[in-house]
Length: 144
Image (tube, rainbow, N blue to C red; front, top):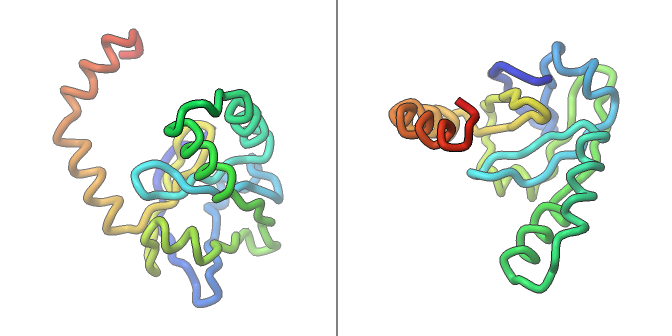
């Protein structure tokens, strides 16, 4: 399970160090794809195969479903973790997420999220202001 948040920076060669506590679970290959809220999702291969399998079974008759499947699958790249624990972030994904030099890597249960540091702070501040409303919605789902 991935939890916690870590500040890192993307080097001039577009490489990002993965926090050492996550590397063992990720093994040496991951999938990076467009995430929601303008961040990137990083999945261990096993988790990605499950998600891709579910996406592949969705009906393509609805345009919103087709669009989501296309964005997730066409935007996905499998990436090797190098010996220094770094991954290469492709330009099109950096642009999508608005990643500059400083980023935050957040552990979110079965995936990592990569956020531009400024966007992460804005998102987190907004979410923190709405914790009561969020907790109510989770309560309705029987989660909280």
